[in-house]
Image (cartoon, rainbow, N blue to C red; front, side, top):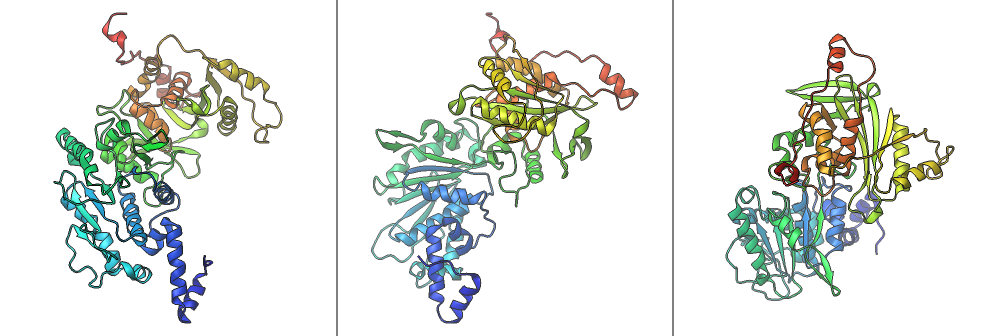
Amino acid sequence: MISRPSDPEILTLAEKGNAEEALEWFRQEGERSLYFYLKVILGYPDLTPAFHKPMCRWLESTESNLGRMLLAPRRFLKSTCVKGWILRKLKKNPMQAFLFVGENDAVGAKNLIDLKWHIRSNVLFQKLYPELIPSDYGKNWSETSITIPRPGSRDEPTIQTVGIGAKGTGFHYTGILYDDPIGLEAANSEAEMMRAWRWFQAASGLFENDKAWELIVGTRWRHGKGDLYGRILKELPYRVVRGRPEGYATYIRSCYNVDGGPAWPERYPLHVLEALRKRMGTYLFNANMVNNPTAKDGGDFPTYNTYRMSEDRQYAILDLGDGLEEKVRLADLVRVIIYDPSSGGKSAEAENAIVVAGMDHKRRILALDLWAKNCGFGHAIEKWHQLNDKWKPWRNWYEAVGAHKAVEEILKMRPTGICMSCGKLHRKLRAFPIKPDDRNKEDRMRALAQPAFEDGRVFIGTHLQKLRTQIETFPYGDLVDVFDAFAYAISKLRPPLGYADAKDRDRVQAPIRQHHARSFTEFDYGGY
């Protein structure tokens, strides 16, 4: 393989009449990396290594799977990546035929605009792949199909576009690409969604042979099996049966990273995502941007306030609504840390969860930090120590249930000097046990957290996406461990000693009004 020349060397090669050698380097880099092919050869400069490069690697590494599904947020260039992947495949075998399926005929035809431009007008692409350029530059192409030069005869065009629900074309294809086959219209219509599902079920009749593949690219619209993607996830999951893969391998990305930061900060930083959340509403935002739709009618905690951290990380800037903001110094908060252990390790359905929360003079509760992971106690307790060092809380608590004795033993065994895990000297961590009552977890969480939510006293940091998701999907979500720890934190917090003024003193000293949990369990309907 040709070694990579520097930019000046490429210019020198061209000036000396060795441009073909430089072009060969581009060809080989394009074959080696889909990300390079898209960003450099096709010229999409907005693609980033953090978000789009892993997506490209997944597209390349899973080509042997006949069924795949890629879900990513709207306007995150997922379709751009996939269409470029298709164009790259044609270099290897121009006899292939692909069917592009869109929401309707017009949307399907729109998917060809980019590909036609590259073949007709992208000079670098034309120089690198002249064998893919028609002699008339595609002047006779229709709006819904293109055909590139082929070494043999075939009835099907190279790429044909249709809308989902279209009548059979009579052709058979190497692969079918569904590019956003459902949208807002289908999301609001059970009949449209069922029509899309039935067309998808019958689409195998369009395969040219048993090696034909499908790639479904889109964004969630409804929770559960309410949209095409959710139904595929539930009814056709990827699995291996007798050594043969079945179902659809999936790649699902949110607009947030696992740590709560923005997945594509260059275009969608946190403040832009927050503005989108407010405009779209929680349900649509979680569907289109997070790819994790909440239940249609929302959970038990549908509303809460938010804040963002100041640049120096010393203040929380509370969003009070109507354009009003208030700065709260983090050092003035009474802070607690709650550890909710999970004993199942990496295979557990629950997670070890640690939440840091604080309360100010106005009894407003701020979720400050969190950590959650399927792992052993030792790793979780090391993270607990690190958060204890960072936040210097008033008190630490942990849920003393199940395997709590193991937590106690590990805490006792940890040396008081230099930590064996990280080589640092930790602050002293004195932990107090919390013994849950006899109520089930969901009823207990409602009782502990709903009063503060209903009073409008809860503020969640915009960087704490895992907690926000668990609040919004409760009790329908798959995980609740972070929210469970936060509910305990709400019950353990107290305001700082001392008062800002006389009104503050009278308000803080006033008795807290009593609330009854709004639950939907068997206890509400009698029989117990």
